[in-house]
Image 1: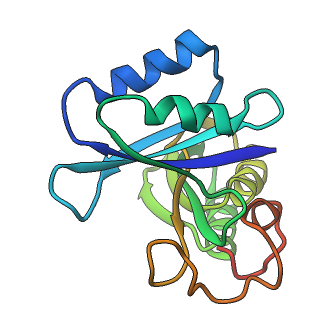
Image 2: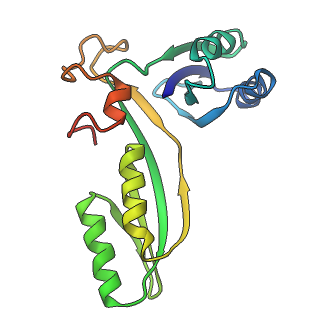
Length: 186
């Protein structure tokens, strides 16, 4: 089972390199690593996904916290959270029927058609890994020419930083939601 960790880090040159070097030295396998600015000046946020069967997320967190520019690390796997990826998928458009089918798939998954040329279309999809896999499979018969994914970004639900005020998830953990346990997860 994948484990999702959030690391709050100082936005300084070399931080990503130190984190990646730590993973290499300790032989931790990264499933996904996404980094971006936060609402606070000079602070970035890393969403790190590790395979919990092969990598002990507690050891990952403990080792990350030892790095100078890492301010906080939290494993949010068992907390109510929103987990999303973004994918851009370029598909072949062979004729009008294919074009209509691609539009139907896009609409049914709440994806966006971001580019349409005579021979190709680019679809943008945001959601869970399962949702993206399903869209990829639906588009596969049209011929996927290119695909790129961002990796997971995550945010604990609710108003407080610790998520204690998050609405009920019907008893489902984030990892269970990821497996499709909630219909409104997307």
